[in-house]
Amino acid sequence: MSDPIKTDVLIIGAGPVGLFAVFELGLLDIKAHLVDILDKIGGQCAELYPEKPIYDIPGIPKTTAQGLVDALLTQIKPFGPQFHLNDMVETIERIGEPLFRVKTDGGKLFEAKVVVIAAGGGSFQPKRPPMPGIEAYEGQSVHYAVRKMDAFRGQKILIVGGGDSALDWTLNLAPVARHLTLLHRRSEFRASPDSVNKMMALVGQGKIDFVLGQVTGLEGEGGKLKAANVKGNDGSTFHIACDALLPFFGLTMKLGPVANWGLKMEGELIPVETAAFETSMPGIFAIGDINTYPGKLKLILCGFHEGAMMAQKAHRYIYPDKKLVFQYTTSSSSLQKKLGVV
Image (cartoon, rainbow, N blue to C red):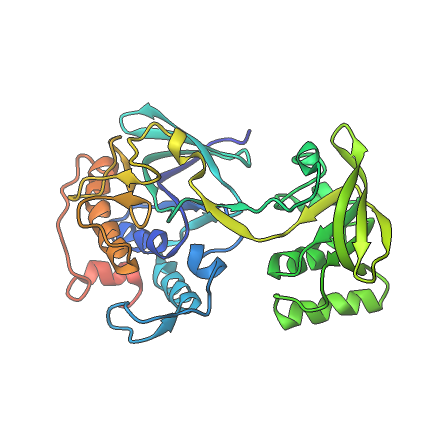
């Protein structure tokens, strides 16, 4: 376990609402770290539909989901947020008034006076592929995410999938693997053409193998893989020796550990009051699609409003002895200085 990372606010979720919360907090001199289970910033927008057009952001007639994320990152750059990606919050424990200790599945510890849950519909969880007996190898030989590349150094790796994650990790792990094979059921990919071209170049150089087919079974014992049984597209059956299997079959949205954090829940949503969108536990807020209240609308712009109101209440926890004077960015020279526009 690492030493605690201390911050004013820990934001769980790095989608648009979590990103804008950084801006509202930053205007009030409140520092934030963000944790997200995905390996990229942007939440659902970046992961599920980066090119999807969005028409209801005030003042922006049309943008894309990724375009919105990029603009938000530019907007919050003056406040220097710290991102912890590919990590999932497991537990939240109150250790002070106010102070929370937050632990992730990657072994990180945070201490924050305020926690903001901006997790959308929950956490993205990998889809388990239809491979008989795969459960016995999960966590030891079968991995749905790469936390540390060096853990795969010198191993025989089998990556299964044809999307961006499969191609990205094929390219990144090829230099550290003893041998790497990419297996996909067809020759067409859902990944970026540049990644596909780079992968095929490695195949041409004899540095990795690319095989068309599907895994039909796994061989090994005690959680340690020895080989995967494969049925090729030509009907042949054969084995691919491997120490590690990385299946990338997409993601699904699940509530995840949120239900175990001691908060009052309504189904898979967190009820909040509407003055500051605080949960049943003082000091923990929920903004965006994860919360519920009378009249709730699941719109990004509503999440932005919730983030602004949350920041005002968070200021009381961070600076209990400091009076908050409300200011407008259009007329406040101090706010403009923070933004770097004067």
